[in-house]
Image (cartoon, rainbow, N blue to C red; front, side, top):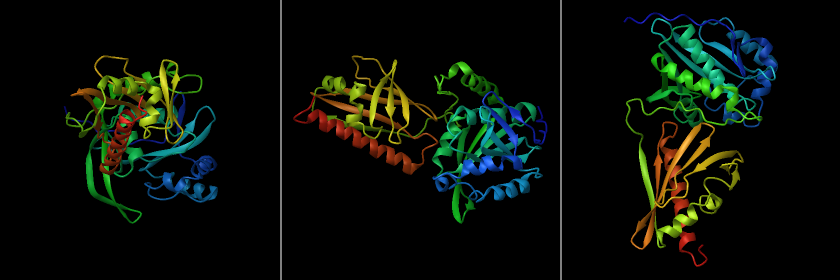
Length: 357
């Protein structure tokens, strides 16, 4: 079957339950200036091509300069509950004859970042691209050093395809570009999961999700991710080690890299991360096999942690499987490995100490 040519996107409004994507207009200037004028602006714009305009008038001029371009086409991301634009994103590198289009130049301000508003914004865009315009391939690209963008791409269901080394020079610096894509034949399954997650009954009264978006996929070639097994030997009966480590309330005493404390929250537990954000956790039930696996429901999707206590002679061996997912650079993976090993050594010190439990 010969692929058909896709239609060029137009400046249309895309309406959702929580979000509305509006073609960027000068009326959005005040909202977007406010969304960009934040204390951590330098960090938020570090991987974007340029800093935002320094004034509302500057935003108006920038928006006016973009309003008639066929590529890119910029959209304001509007919170329907407030009517305020909290950020922007654009359709770019539009190639209708090949059916390829990219979502890029994304800025989601603090009022909408990591909320259902931006997730629905991605959903509305993908649905429009595939179903209304007939594109075959929907792309997401970012600086390989931009870990938040890599995590977001994976969470939204884009497949990691690889790194284009020395791909660009941005702000005078080399950029290795991470490539992600979503394809038309993948969209029906992705759409179903997006719609399940976006349903109103998946959120509580404070708009917190009850279940995570489950669209993350394995590597593009169907293989596994790089991994490393980290372990420590403890001179203590393995059942004692398991009894102590299996109590979520003890987690903050030896796994300080996770956060400052763990508290019961209904049937689950709430972890207070280093930045103060509570994260929901579920632990494996008590068992006779030393399984300490647990799920961490982070903002970018669920993370399964494989942690085991095993007999090693009269003592114990504690193992942790660390996986390098596409959102982790090599340096971040090494940092996480060092943190895990430090936590395992702390557990060893506690269990072998004179005042051990």
